[in-house]
Amino acid sequence: MDGEEVIKSRRTIRKFTEEDVSDETVRKIIEAGMLAPSAGNMQSWEFIIVRDKTTKYSLSQEALGQPHVLESPVTIIVAANTKIAEKKYGSRGREVYCFVSAGAAIQNMLLMAVSLGLGAAWVGSFKERSVQEILKLPAEVRPVGIITLGHPADIPDMPKRRAYKEMVHNEKW
Ligand SMILES: Cc1cc2nc3c(=O)[nH]c(=O)nc-3n(C[C@H](O)[C@H](O)[C@H](O)COP(=O)(O)O)c2cc1C
Image 1 (spheres, helix red, strand yellow):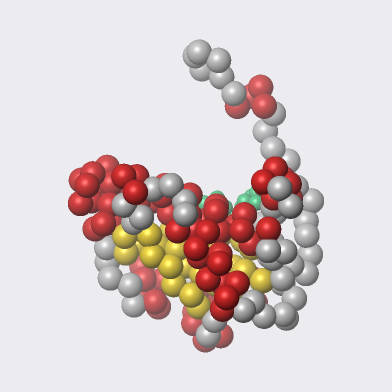
Image 2 (image 1 turned 180 degrees about the vertical axis):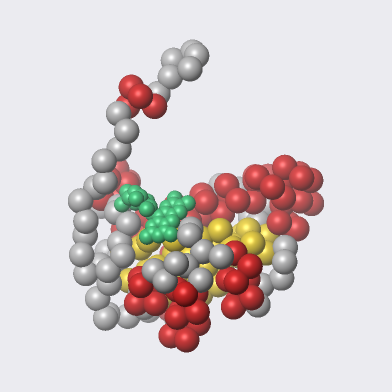
């Protein structure tokens, strides 16, 4: 698959088969995240791999009970390390850059999943404090997304996008 095909075929996958995902594949996906751009190349992200059913159940409960958090064979939590980002950029690093950099890492990971024939979802609806507690994260490490990962059982149609001319502005709004 070339880059355009990967981008165009990515969907949010919420239903997975029982098939597992190897540690080697998980590593490839995380390494794709590590190649994302980050402010000042600070790489202010952390990745937590969760396979344990009990932990996935707790995460799912704190993510509005979303079943794919429990049912996917692997979840990877991508978190922003606010301390690292703050070192170079102060409050802008702590409040903005570390989150957008984590988002760039997540998107790279979603695209790598597609190119490896897997499916993934970016879950952002969760109680941050609870997720920190479950994963024993220090306060400065703030979870940004839970990636649910596995072999797709169902590939939905592309949800509609807003029209190009509605979103793209020349010179002024
Ligand atoms: C910041 C963010 C938070 C999201 N949170 C959730 C979520 O909690 N649960 C979920 O199933 N999908 C979540 N999504 C996925 C979106 O629902 C999905 O990207 C959108 O509907 C477009 O569909 P597509 O990814 O298939 O193009 C989230 C996406 C982003 C970028």
